[in-house]
Image 1 (cartoon, chains in turn orange, cyan):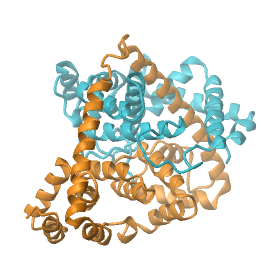
Image 2: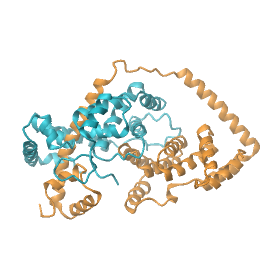
Image 3: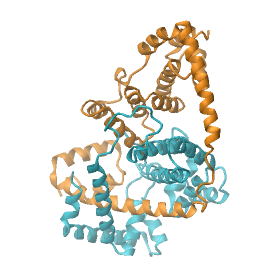
Image 4: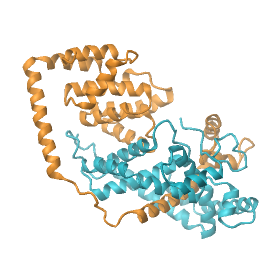
Length: 243
Length: 225
């Protein structure tokens, strides 16, 4: 090892005990020094093994807390079926009315014109963009989706990735999942992503499956003049006959 | 980027990291055991083995959240038992993220755990081909690569082998060190006479393990992509 680092630095790096700038410097050194990289890899084997041990212990502890009767709350398929049927009838009625009034075509155009795709947004940093674009362009869409889903297990507070994931769901024609992810994001604490996600949720719901959540989000957009989608919200509400 | 790392100090130069609550605050929180705040829970997870377990048990009893996860899993092809498995795995990830400083306290802990569980289930569902919720399933694309599955299993086996190289006392001390406990706490838990002695033991154990790994280069090789 050279004078620029020691064993303690490696430990601090792997235990996440370095500041962001120290971490970047350390990673730069690592890229230039094969010996350091080998030492970090070896040490990582140890910390990963210990983490596995910690997690196994916690898993055993959680299993000891687990109730003996696993299926405490039974599913209620009949009740669910009633809801599905009710939802299907409502959907059919809504679709019928829309088709009848000829609004849908105009609405579709509005939605496709104002939907916020992640590619239209200035993302947070060059490195992150590169990582994500590589994932999105060089591999099939579902592969990118898998990558984001896996990433978000360990970092669900990465709101930007959540937005991209929702958009990827939409690109992949998984509209229900896209709507669900946008709705979750619309309920998050990040103002900027909350607005964008809320708007996309309203748009996708306007196209299909309008519901109470969409109604509430649209109302909040109309009420808040500082909301980035306030003007567009008014336009949408007019198109939908809600104003 | 992530936060600044685990929220603990060990007296060996981590003074720039956020400090923990005092011992007395943590003790009160553990005793009262009701309506703990997110901040108290994250502090407890980082504080000591005992408070960490109390916090985990408290989180485990979030029945409303458990039901929400159950609903999510069951409406997407899972069973009640699987939903509990996902809740367990979610807690494990939550614990890890708090300990390693990845969790940022800008939202509710319950919302955070729920998100983890959702993504875990989506991942799980993909692996087990039970994509019943999504209407359109593109051909061939929803199957995880067998190579990746094999690699994960192989990795787990390698890590188990590394653990087997450790004797019980070393395994205990290194595990506590990995949990970022201070040398004083480790000394106290293991009934050692001083933090210096704990530090010495930890150093010896680590050195011994590194030497053992030198004799088994195949282990490291197995994890190279």
